[in-house]
Image (cartoon, rainbow, N blue to C red; front, side, top):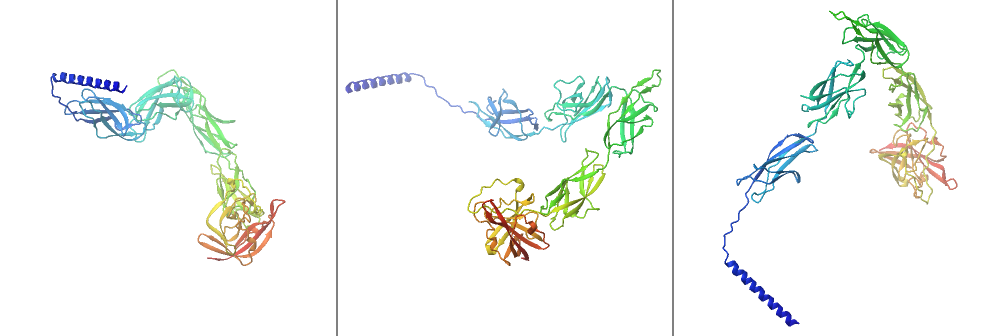
Amino acid sequence: MNTTHRLNRKTLMARAAQIALAALLCLSVLPVFPVRAQSAAPTAVEITSLAPNPAYIEQPVTVSVRATSAAGVPRGRVEVRTGQDRVCTITLNTAGEGSCTLSFEQAGAIRLKAFYLGTDAFLPSASAEKELAVMDRFIPVIEITDEPDPSVAGRPFDVRVQVSAVDGPLATGPVSVWLSAEKCSEPPAVLPPDSCEISLSGGTGSCTLTPQTPVDGYICAAYEGSAAYLSGVAEGEPHLVSASNTFVFLTRLDPEPSLPGEQVWAYFEVESPDGEPAASDRVTVTSGGLSCTATVGEGRCALVFNTPHLHQVTASYHGGTYQPAGSDEPVALESATSRPYTHRVNAPPTSIRLSATGLSVFTAVGERVATITATDPNPDETIQFSLVNGQGSDHNAFFLVEGDQLILARSVSGQGNSLKIRLRATDEAGLTYEQSFTLFLNGEAVLPDTGFPAGRVTQLPLQPKEKAYQQLNEVVLEIPSLGVSAPITGVPNLELTWDATWLSNQVGWLHGTAFPGWEGNSALAAHSTLASGLPGPFARLRELRKGDQIWVRAFGETHIYEVRSVTLASPEKSDVLRHEDSAWLTLVTCQSYDEETGTYRWRLVVRAERVDIR
């Protein structure tokens, strides 16, 4: 079997050699021509124009390019790119030129470059960069003027529209104009019959409206926008289309505003495009049940308003005739009524009220004491409140007014049983009312609960926002004999107590007592046992003895206090927080936990007097 395989292989190799020899003999008889390689020609490509430049966002810009070569006119394609992004592709014409159109959605300086892709005969090339400035489109300001106003139903009047923007070019494009009973918003899907079209020239244009139906409304204008301008709708120009050929105007009421019982003159004018009303024609001015009548020549009559607040006033022309010169036919001047005029009859506020009649002596400076309200016969007016001197203003200095809030400006600790203040309410017309108040001081408070059961963990709820503590930077309490050093944080007084639940290793300054280191009685509380069951900062407070020192470090100074007493007090015995004229420190913590009630029976109170400042 192996012998057969070797024979077959020899036979195949012999045949292959014969075929190769025959092919070589055939090639030797064919003619031989020399081959010459031809190289591609170098090219140059340039962006010949960007039109327009600068352009606006979304405005079409035509990019024109030209490719050249000493070896002829390049053909093929050119890509226009911004960085790595291809923005358009151009197929060159027989002159090696071409163009494409693009637009951009963001303002800025756009750098464009053209890349000729080359052919077999021409090498690729790249152009120099060309910068296109793309600018934001302008927000149009649309102004409308009309003549005449008022107009008469069935008669034409002219509308002129101007579209502009600060530093903007002259606006072009179409503007739609129509009448509406409401203020203008979006243009309707189908314009009403009372409409016209304007083609802006130099930013302005005009058209004519001929409304057939009376309306007291607005002329609206919608600008379609252009390459340089966004579209927009005007707010609307008030316009009266009257059913009468006579117009009555209430020009003013004097005084404005007036006081109850005061004589008010109503001034009016009467006009007509068809002729001048006679001086003897009559006009009646009305407001509710009030009225007065005078001639056109007099031009005014008087009303007396007895009720405060806003009153609608109108003037009605009784009608008349006009005799044109050289004509035997008189022109009828129809009766007409003016637009309503709103007149304010003003009266001063009549009372002031406080939402609270007293405050706690532990109210913190800066906290709200009460909300102030006033009774005013003009319910739409905004009232301004202020503290003023006068009878009953003895303690104004302890407060300030912010809007309608009475705010505590100074600590009221030690100010007796009540405070007197005087408030003023001022309405929009400058009329005032003043009232004195007596605020009663409540010196009662419950001493804070500053301890948890020893030896077991107490799970605490999240601290409510209204009970958040005030962080006091650089204020520290130190008790050298007990090895205590703890930062002081502010605890707000709410509902006549202080919630010290979330104090950990801090000492809480009880808001409403004197700030630590200041004159007065500064009350500080801390836990005897923490929520973890471990001892708190005041766990050994009962070891203090008369004469021991307590330090308060604040803002670069050290206030030295000496202990004067260590006593037990019931939680309700808030007189330990009484005001002091000099600087005192009162430390409070819990004592004697009652397992049956789950509360501490007593408060341990340490009183110390300042003896030095270093």
